[in-house]
Image 1 (cartoon, helix red, strand yellow):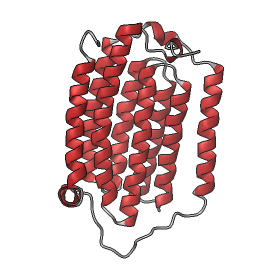
Image 2: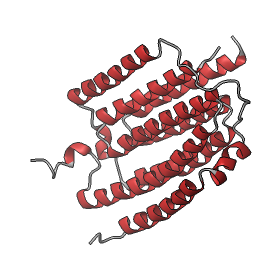
Image 3: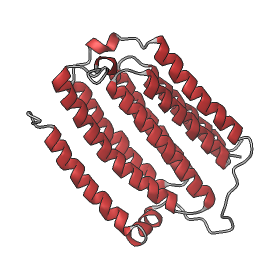
Length: 100
Length: 166
């Protein structure tokens, strides 16, 4: 029998994976992909709560999250392309012009 | 073990495996393809949770539009030079510690079953009607604001993509 806890466990594990990717990787694009994984983990938790609480509002919230994530990806990738034009790199360790 | 359980474990394990591959693969294109697989398996989990409309949206918006954007940008930026770079020890240890702490915390919290607040109601379902009706009733203002936000994002992207940012 699959309960709410199973879904929350999967969602939490995916979130942890996303956080690990955010910290470990140095390629800006892969960091951005890890961020998308985090958003998806949150979506899974929201839908699981929505289903087991029998309230549809969680699904509406996920709808908004997906819409805003799409806008966020467009803006973020445009920023990465603009950054690449200026610095010719997307490796975060080489983007250190703000370092003291 | 019912077929529901088997499908749940299949989708979850496949999703987490593709998540590991997204992080571990050295080539960004491989990461992107694994991310597509992750989104598809996530849509499978959404179907198991009876959120059919959101499963379709997940496939269309995430696995379709968002990943096409990612692959286009990977194509635009020629990333062959950074492909060989290994991640440093400090970053790897830091990432594992943070993720391990999260999982440990999760294990403690989920030892007791999470109580369901409301029960005894009718099933809401996840079809188009069930999700979209509150969108046009209770959530009308956020819906309009989201539309405005998409417009602003579009203008911002056009502005950012101009040759001279001054």
